[in-house]
Image 1 (spheres, one colour):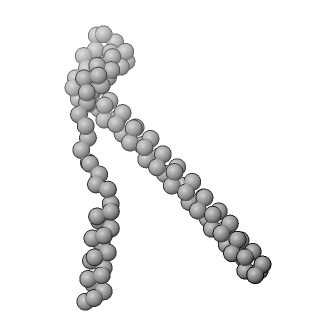
Image 2 (cartoon, rainbow, N blue to C red; image 1 turned 60 degrees about the vertical axis):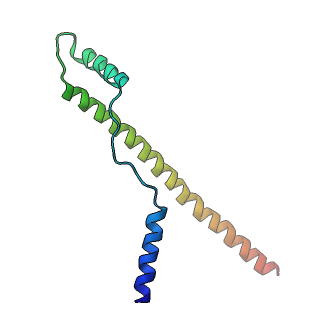
Image 3 (cartoon, helix red, strand yellow; image 1 turned 30 degrees about the vertical axis):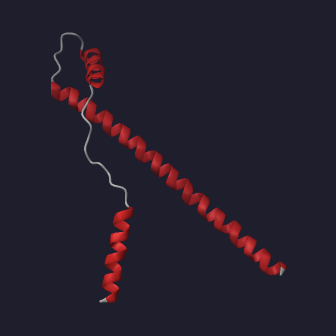
Length: 103
């Protein structure tokens, strides 16, 4: 029973420290819609009528690309941390060995 209470307490601690992520996608701004409209007119020409669905599709693709860039940056940062941490441990271990042998 004590182990269960400690586990529940630990899980509550972890959930409190986790930052809350907003899962809502922002709405496209007027500037976004104007820029996307220009892009679609450039692609299809003046004679093609694009609807709201095509504009939304382009905007969602842009949002996904931005999200992919942010995720790539986080992965790159985490990867470098995984490279640097073992190197730091090697230096500390070498220092401890040297201090032990010097004493």
